[in-house]
Amino acid sequence: MLDRIAAKMSELGFTKYEARAYVSLLQNYPATRYELSKNSGVPRSAIYDVINRLETVGAVSALSTRPEKYIPLPPDQFLKMIEQRYQQKIDQFRESLSELDTNVESEQLWNITGYTNLISKAKEMIQEARQEIYLSCWEREIREIEKELHYALKRGVKVVLFSFTEVPHIGLVFSYELNEQELEKVWDHKIILVRDREELLMGEANRKTQRKAAWTTNKAIVQIAANHIVLDITLFGIRAGIDVSNAVIEMHPGEMELLGRLLGQKFPDNPLIQLDFSKNGMALKNNLKKTKKEKS
Image (tube, rainbow, N blue to C red; front, side, top):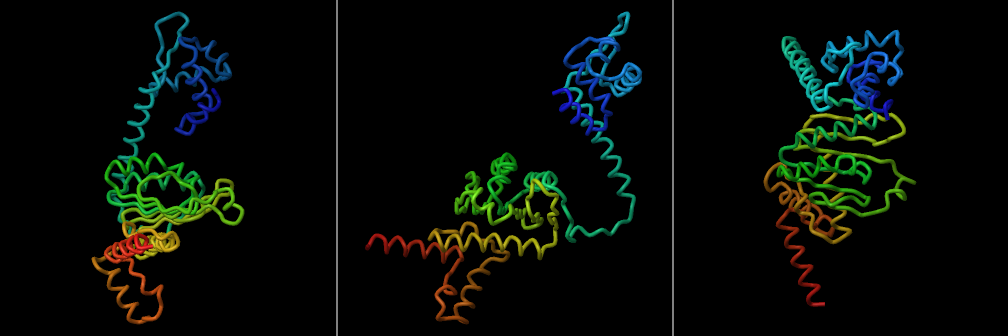
């Protein structure tokens, strides 16, 4: 456990010896430098510099004893200290960047490499959602971001979820409820996440191999991805015979109704083209289905 926690602390900018010393001191305090060296595995030749460094950043304090003994800063205060320090550095860096005249366009496609970074980006996008989230992915990935999706719902964000696999019921769910392990025999895990029709994350979700996913704010690509999810939901509605009108995306009022009418005029003898997926059309179809069932 000592090594695992110390490794996480090392990721915050502390050396391996500093991390081991602090975590060890949490378990056994107060302690002299000799005792701390013995308990943490930090060499006696290094423990003096390690303690000085931890004292300098405020992670440990010395007691007025002979020999000197040390106590650790409580974990909650230690974390607050780190957060404030990093936030200050981020603010200073942001201020420095604002002085540069840059023309980097966020509408290009950017790579998100690795499964951990993919999930982190998905969580960030969900946390920033203000109006709606359209998401197509597998159960495993849904479980990774489930908490963020629930928080989004509580904020009043519309969450629309499509999957071929069994998934938790979060928001509007359209799922074939197929077994994930069976699907893995022929398909790879994928994710398509659209936030507020402004931002897109899309790619393979592979835990074992470092894959690159695409992230962009390009409006055309974002709309294409959102329409792809809606198409999958529409086909699901046709196959399952259910109303999917609450998942339809209209960039402009009435566009689905207009598109349906134009296609109907162009292909009058094609029953699939005659399908009207506007909200009014779907409501009418459901009423007709209920009437037919009642008569039968």
